[in-house]
Structure formats: structure tokens, C-alpha cells
Image 1 (cartoon, rainbow, N blue to C red):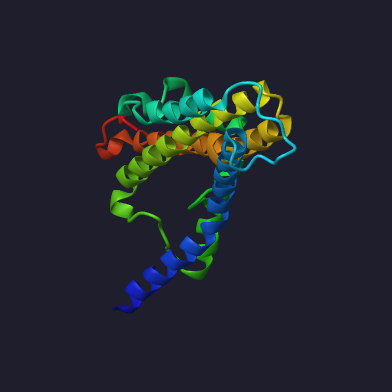
Image 2 (cartoon, helix red, strand yellow):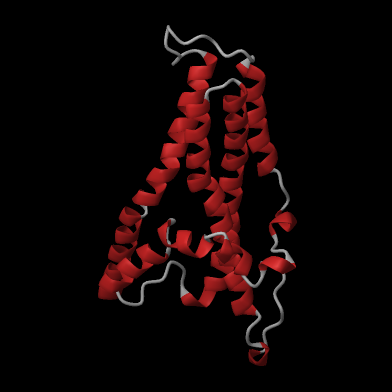
Length: 208
């Protein structure tokens, strides 16, 4: 292994370690989601807690099916709308700030680059295509979890378990809703980069 390859490997390992922090936030949502349904369905419900007034099984199934339906959304519906391409809407909703804290986000890339200059998540030659593809995959995954989590939040509020509803809502926003927004903001940046310089012979890219 050459010195350059060793540096790339070391940089990738450092990024993977730093990425454990935002992954932990998603795991908090996943843990809250699982514990809530296990409590509602019975296995984790304490003896002094009465069963929910609304049967949980239909809602649990709806939560899983809702996520599955989100998984079936065709790729064309992930394309940016014209009003998103400037990125201002995403920035107004806080995407640019939150982007620093997601996996392979600005802060993580800055730390890795400080130790290993020239570090890139994707090779420069294929950065546009690879970044857009990764972004769509990540958005799809978080959207599935977002839909499933929202059904759980609605059910928790319906049966009056307000603590669970609030906990899952906050975790769902941080672990899924904002990551979806960040991915669309990322693709808006990619769209602007791809369409910024027609003098270089690039054609307008509307598939991002």
C-alpha cells in the first residue's frame, strides 16, 4: 500500500468514527420507536400501566405499511421542484446549520481535512453523480423512517401517552425530518453547481 493509499484509508477511518455521533442520534429515535411499540403492544408495559384505550395492533401495522409505501415512491418524485433549486427554502428551515452535524457533514469533513488535506467523500471526477445518488438513497431511507415514526406519534397522542408522543416527535425530527431536508438541500447545491457554467459545455441537469 502506497503512502497516499494509507492516508486515504486513515482519513476514511477517522470519518467513520466521527460519523458514529450523528448515527447515535438516529439510534435514539429507533430505540424510542421500538420501546414505544413494545410498551403499547404489551411486552414492555409495566403492570401498573393500563392498556391503551385504542387497539395498538392496527396502528402498528399502519406504521410499518406506511414506511413500506414510502419505500415504493418512484425515483422521479425525489427530483427537486423548481422552487427548491435556489436552496433558500431549505436554508430558511435550518438545513444549512443542520448539515454540519449529519454523517459526512460539514463539521466532520472539516475535521478530517484538517488532519488529511484534500480529503473528499467521493473522488472528484465522479463527485456530482456519486453525491446525488448517495443523497437520494439517504433521503429515501430517512423518509421511510419518518413516515413510520409519524404514525407512531399520532397513535401515542391519540391514547394520551404525551411523553412518548413528544419524545418520538423530537427524535423523529432530528433523526429523520431534518436529514431529509438536508439531502434535498445538498442536491439543490449540486444542481446549481451542474448548471452554473454552461460555457464548459455542460447541459442543464434536471435529474438531480
